[in-house]
Image (cartoon, rainbow, N blue to C red; front, side):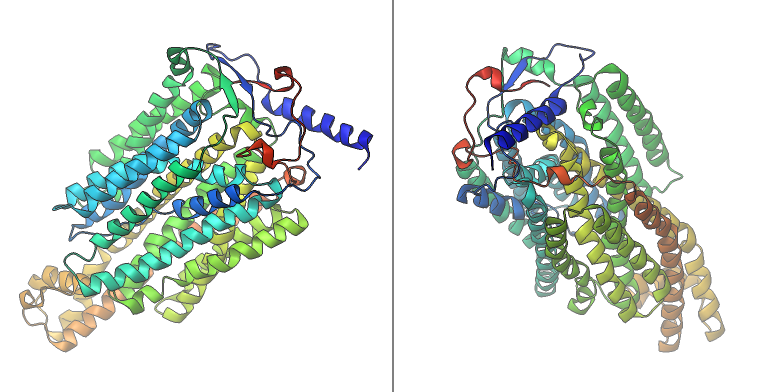
Length: 586
């Protein structure tokens, strides 16, 4: 490559970096000045192939299992409401803490946030696995939920330490590890619970403890990234740079909103209880105030205005990840519940086998999508195809009825969509974000995904409950009354059909009555699930249409490394002076 051409490319790269890091004067300009010291993008030739160091591959190997090590939860002989909270207690704090952790990591560095997060994972796993009651398990999940706010940073690290051309492969590796973890969890935990129905569930948290401890040691020993910027100022001046107003409004909005939706899924409360609608209203008002503050009150808060300077891709990604989150939660929760209710029993390996194709198909889809994106530098149309697969899967679920084979096949189609969508949307938002803000952007993306999933799941539960709470008793009475069944024992009969326990309390339960009641129950449940799948089908179709609006970020699919672990790994000249670096305000 000629010298003139290299200088031209370097000048263009410097212009791009300056545009991506220049910030209008903030509303509250109290932040200390930071100077970029790591050779991130300013001196790299985007067309010159870089060697990926062994250290970078080691960090990617650590990040892959970290992406989903905390995502397994299982019941502890709990009520339906408690089972909901075992999952939600881990999700609610993660949504709220993600953007906060990312902003702190941008100022003070990623390493200690990651190390402290995995320390909390260890504590949470120990609390949960030694629990004597469901409430203690939920408390342990809250601790791990706070730590799970680092999920966005985990995804960002995988992309930052690798050249941009490998970004889809890096995110694909994370998703493959997550899918493998899910398959191992489904099969392994099913076998553990079958072998030990009383304490088999504790292996969920024992495995989590082993993963968290290994990752804590691994990141502590291997992850020593140089600071991308130097912050000048006292400790208190650094603390003042944090967007405390935004954080308070964010916490005051997301926590009650998500708790309200979770309570709405709890049959003890439902939507008619003030716990549900009161929290949702309060959370919604606080979130609106938070958005107004981030828009007009500050330009450098956790919702940094520079995220929106590079076109429409960032807001499109936020919408799409919310849709993907809701569709993913439905497959993981609603489809899994339908499998157990219609085709099998909880903990049965044959039942588990009908859920695993979703993850196995995702494992296959990740490398195929990475190969396509890397070769053709096209992330737009594969993303549209991914959401089309989601839409086809939901249509198939709705039309499957009691056909287990058909539903299982469409479950695999949904897995293809999920395996591609989560990778490609994360990659798109990172390609469309200034290099210095990848961590914040990814953390926001993961939080919005969890928010969309939690809200979507609550809406789906509300739809299903409204269609089955009264129809199930009516259908069972209609089917069993002609056979001589006494309606006074309807409650115990439904309880037996749901749990497989308590048959002795159902007087006059002949095999004919039990068969008729079971058939009526399954038919009613299938109809309820059918309405849920049709209700969310337009979301998948709308997502496909939104993908058409994407701008393909081909210019970022190059050999630039946004956050090299060591500048010696890069074949670039050293800046002559500090003035060659970029002044950054946060």
